[in-house]
Length: 401
Ligand SMILES: Cc1ncc(COP(=O)(O)O)c(C=O)c1O
Image 1 (tube, rainbow, N blue to C red):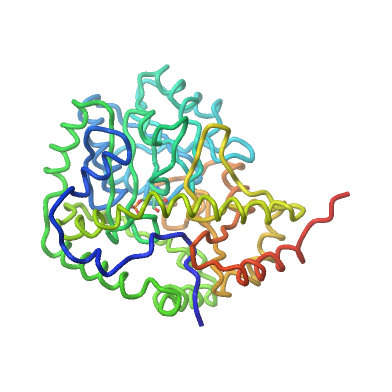
Image 2 (image 1 turned 135 degrees about the vertical axis):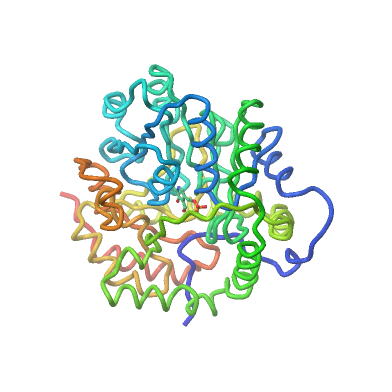
């Protein structure tokens, strides 16, 4: 059975695999983001580790504040650096951190506040910057899912002190695992390069593994084969009731730190030429899907504030209750239609993170985890599949009074 990818990954071309000379990935990424140079890394998580380590060495501050609803890898990266994690609840019905809660959490020991452009939606960096600056802390933009997102015409990742993008599978552009670390500050950029060379040197075994994985991705990233690579493990995890495994939130605390090899860079550099057009098509498709989904009573499709143009790997939908969200997922999650969930829990609710994260009252992050789901914005989502999805949502619609 064909399987629609849960996120809109840039469809790979076999020609990408052919190493070519010319403008390399770092330079293409820098041009695309609108900055002089970038630091390539082996993952978004590695980029965060390099940024935090560099800032820690500069300041000696030890606390990092992150949103209570984000990728578990962010918490693991903070722990990897030996730094203290503080969780900030989200503002009600928002992807942004609650500004008052953030102000209460920040002090003279705060090294950085991580602001997340969750699922490609553009976060309010200005609000976090105001709070962070008041205590001399840095702001790091987590744009893992947002390469190509812009705010007032400028790429996300540049408003804070540093930002990072992920090139992991399923993201727009991919090296199977990879990352891009950016800063507008030239001194800091030079320090990032030094720290990256020290913490993440080239490692042949890792590079060979990732090259094979990237080749496998090129083979399997098509509707006819994705059922084997993604659909079968997903359905197995759902049958076992293991939702964390179903979305791939079960990360190891051992964070690979190595360089991004030349061949994988050249694969992504080749694919880069198609990225702007692909992102524009995704935005147009998302707009159409959003208009139709938003007509269904009780369905809210998350979108950007005026002046911001995020990326659309999927549509993030909020339902009025967990029960209604789960009723929809019972019909659609395993149907091969690209309906899924983002991170399963707020960070304190992952059993494997409990020691590291501790207990926290983060009701808005928990409500976000409980009431949201994602609908793929992959180019494979055709009209027939979208109709099937809409039909299920309509049956579970809330009648307006
Ligand atoms: C919000 C967020 N932050 C950080 C990461 C980590 O990026 P990577 O998987 O490239 O290490 C991810 C990965 O999906 C993410 O979604």
